[in-house]
Amino acid sequence: MLDRKTIVENADAVKENCHRRGVDCDVDSLVELERQRLAKLQQTQELNRQANEVSKQIGKAKDDAQRQETIARGRELRDAKDAAQKEHDQLEQQILEIQRLIPNLTHADVPTGGEDDARELGLGKTPVCSFDFQPLDHLELGERHDLFDFEAGARVAGAGFYFLKNDAVRLDLALQQYAVSLLSERGFTPVTTPDLALTEILHGTGFNPRGPETQIYAIENTELNLVATAEITLGGMLAGQTLDAEQLPIKLCGLSHCFRTEAGAAGRASKGLYRVHQFTKVEMFAFAGPDQSDDLHEEMRQIECDLFDALEVPYRVIDTASGDLGGPAYRKYDLEAWMPGRGDGGQWGEVTSTSNCTDYQARRLDIRFKTAGQKGTQFAHTLNGTAVATGRAMIAILENHQRADGTINIPKVLQPWMGKERIG
RNA sequence: GGAUGGGUGGCCGAGUGGUCGAAGGCAGCAGUCUUGAAAACUGCCGUAGGUUUGCGCCUACCGUGGGUUCGAAUCCCACCCCAUCCGCCA
Image (cartoon, rainbow, N blue to C red; front, side, top):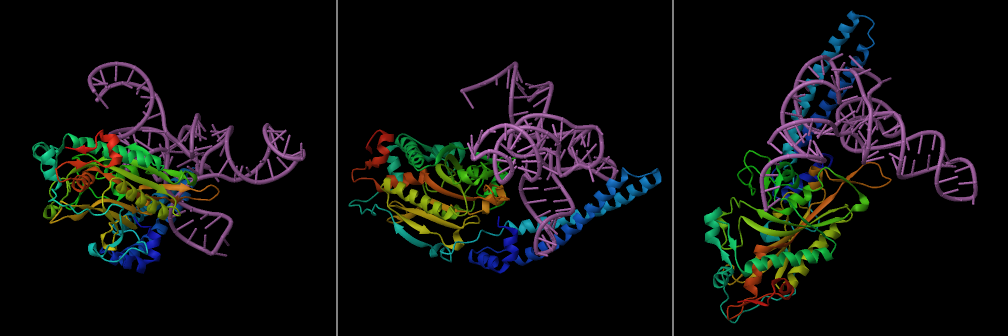
């Protein structure tokens, strides 16, 4: 959520930002409603103050008649206050409805436009390989080595679910192990998180569990939802807390399952592991001071690059354009890995993304920090980044590391965790 | 799931329905004393919002949400959480 004063005081800039991001919301109405709300708030407080004053006199009344008269006057004031309060609360609701739709501000270097306007920032160390044979896609490779069972997944949980088998299980675990150990070395505290979270936490993080477009599985008749990413639980971990400035930055890496309905994705359904309802992810998350978050965002991007360099997977880095950012992000980098089996002759496919959300999530989650010697508190900045989403990483590894004889090389860094050098 | 006891400021801990935003203590900050430190003493010491050029003033907040009342930390209801015991269980 964007700060209300910021919106009111910079209405034109906020409107321009909404436009750039392709979000349609009525900033002018918000400004006008907020003006009315403040007037109503002052009226409410004044009536309440008078009522408090009258109440205090009741105890001091010298006879019953005066007492009764004072009580009547007090009741009148309370009623007036309650009415004013009610009007105020209605205004507040209307304002929040608009305010919640307004996306975060946008970093000055973010390219304007949609998906096609993203800026390519560079390539990974591993070149895109040219095979001297017809490469297989990960499903064909999986078939050959008995790695996946999508039919059984569909029998058990419906289309979009799957079983991993044999070396795919080992590879899945190896990726998690490798990512967690690398992040531990880089100062990230490993945590496992709940796979469910309260609706309030989803909202705070910028996810909406209800509505036709939702990506979220909600548990009926409860406030619980299956998480779409550990970003939700890690952000929620410190909801309502006030931190000390010296504690920042707090760097976490969370291991969780991710559940997504993929509603509305039917048209662009991809085969295999690329777009599924459940996968496993190692996620970076950080709480930072406002002066730390830009550097930390670069750090997270670099870690993602180091990780996929170590996995010997070719990739490109993208600076996501304004229209493609999603509400909470101030800036977002994506890593797109080369997937030889995707489309005709290979395609780039998103494997990680890292966002700086500045104080947008923290405001709604109420995560603040206090600087020693300074009065008051400030909202923390939050950042998130994928270390490894194992499903898509596996696609990239299997398809890029396959050999003419059908065997698949395992990247060196994963070999200790896999206990072997190749599959097949 | 059942029984009981609890949830008050950074922490501990008082609080008869009416100057309670909340005693007292600890911690923290500033100062006096001291060569310095400790001790002792003095003062300050929650968050958010509104208003004011400013000093300040005002409003809300005692687990959460309702209710009773002119007035609720205090009474009533519901829920949540914590502790302990019992049951169940990986």
